[in-house]
Length: 379
Image (tube, rainbow, N blue to C red; front, side, top):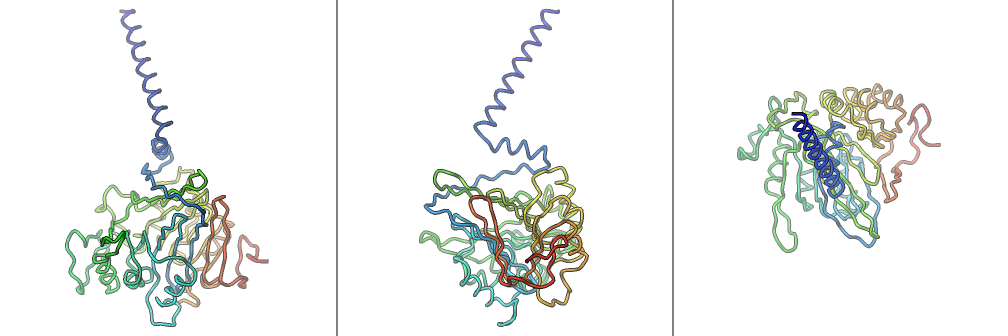
């Protein structure tokens, strides 16, 4: 019996050794597998996307534009591989007002090289975030749309059951939302002389996308990591507040991290903090402050987890909601986060270069009464 037991132990040891060799080999030759393992222990969803490689002769800076659209959100991202992203579009309005589409179009034409949006993200169904998307979809080619899992309950349009779905209990009946969905359903564009139809999906924590740029035999990668909503299936989404349907997205390029939050408020932030509380990779350089600086967003718990060096607040001058709220500003100051605001700074641009350094450029250079960690933002 002793000899048999000894042979069994030797056999098991050999099996374990073989498994270790196989595991090390997989990690060495297929690095995404190691990312999945790390994600499991760090609290990530383990979803890793491999982006396509684009070869370039010149490595352009990556630019993130926080456009001043009045009381609303609109973020434009020019990627070094020539692709472009838009996160929300601001609120449509009559010509000449800060939130008007004409002002946004003028900004795009005068300050960017954008003529096509490869990815568009509509964080939620409120008009101050999707109001200009109808014009964007008319004037620009849009190739892929990420949309919230919100049911359209209006009567202006009739959509098929496979297209019009949403979580209970929240529904949206506004004409603005209906117009947006109608154009998403019918959007087409030409690529390589071929007519193509816009693709779309309801975003979840698995909606990540990425890209790689090859320059001088070196790879530069960007990554959009959707961290919320974290649910096993779309039908499990049960936020009661429309704002909480907003995804929390971590964007990374050359070691610079930005957290986009839409209008996510306390409940969505609590989900985020709970799922990623043990994750060492969610601290960021820049935070796009949730819900225009509302007091019900940007909790102390969120700030303690993500530790933003700088924060950007998208809000309008003298807006009727009195955003940003002083309580939110106090929390940002306590977190020693630098504060940039569209109502004070106008258009805000973050430029990130291939060396992993970034800088802010603002329309208004030295606004009064802007503080960071108790110190004046500009000398």
